[in-house]
Amino acid sequence: MLEFWRALPAALEEPLAAAAEEFARQAEQAGDLALAQALRERAEGLRAIRAIADQQANPMRQAIQQAWQRYVELVQAAEASEHDIAAWQAAVAAGEALLAPEFAATPGIDRSAVRQMVSSACNTLGNALHDAGRAEEALAAYDRAIALQPEEAMWRRNRVGALIDLGRHDEAAEELTRARALEPDAVRLAELEARLRDQQ
Image (cartoon, rainbow, N blue to C red; front, side):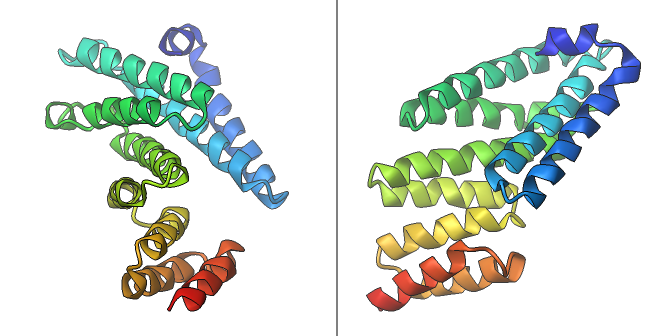
């Protein structure tokens, strides 16, 4: 992907990312939230790649490129494996490497976009762990996703589900309130409320 971005005419870089965002907006309006999220992540990824490609004179450029390429490869492998826990653990670890302190001072890197992408990978890891019945580990993954992207309501709803499974009902109720405040119309809220009510 990095080589593709370097070969892309400069005039097309931002329009390509903007087009992905527009398709995401249309998907969201059509009710396809999963597609909308995937498209937004691609737009953010394109911008992050562009930022890395722009660092020709920076001494950290090669290290960042290698870390980014490894992350992209591992995410693609994890996506192909669907819910393989080990694959998503590897992807998350590679993403965390991109957030390492040595890269923090590198100019031109959109760390906000990187944080969002790593947050999404943590959430997906949490889902894989949750589906495998490993609620405690899933909760830790959701906690990391929230630490990286605290305003993402979906991560908080997923955390509620893990807390309910662990019997931590008071915490689940508190997290449910936070999730509702961020996205009050989310369909899953009613399901989580019913689960919590049934188990209390």
